[in-house]
Image (tube, rainbow, N blue to C red):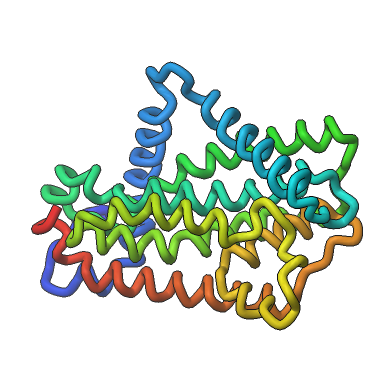
Amino acid sequence: MTQDAIILAPGRADRHYWRDLWRYRELFFILAWRDIAVRYKQTIIGLAWAFVRPFLTMVVFTIVFGRLANLPSEGGAPYPVLVFAGMLPWFLFSSILSEASNSLIGNASLISKVYFPRLIVPIASAATALVDFAVNLFILALVMLWFGYMPGARIILLPFFVLFAVVASLGPALLITALNVKYRDFRYIVPFIVQFGLYVSPVGFSSAIIPERWRLLYSANPVVGVIDGFRWCILGGDTALYPPGFALSLVVAAALLWFGVRYFRATERSFADLV
């Protein structure tokens, strides 16, 4: 028997689940590449949509919060740069949540016929969000160049905050993905969560304007810690993190990831029958 042979035995899938994740890594890359190709191939605007959406959102938020509400910027950065530095992690979070939520339903034929760790499917769908993130990061570089605002040495820590954003999004994404298999109306809830979250998270404004007595509670939203971390990393200067709030966001994000994976694994056996 070869080393790469697939052995099906009672309970073996559970015992070797995490090892199987690595063994099926080629399937992960195939699914991820397929999702990226489907999204950008044979479309009218294609990749241009990844430019248009964040740019128009930046313009609207700058006018509403920076001009009309006259809210302050942070670290001496121009207000459009502040907004875009907040939009960068928010679009990553919302894209992973949206892409993953319907991933199992979209791969119903594969899930009902072939064994593999189902966790691969929602994680692979997040690859499209990372492509959009790379485009948005390029746009942010252009915006900062336009305003003549250069990041400091903290920018080298950006990969850590990208990982933080992915962790913060995967927990809720896995939970909603599993729930969507059994309760199909959850696909209507995700757009509401994304829209509501955009306004309760500090995307268009600095979280420093939140009153001190509410700021720790506000940071229970893990996206707050993600956005604050991105701005601290990108804007540099006098930009400061709120340590208690950032620590709370880390704990909440980790707890959501643990619960999301746990619920996903607990319901995974029924996916093939329900999709």
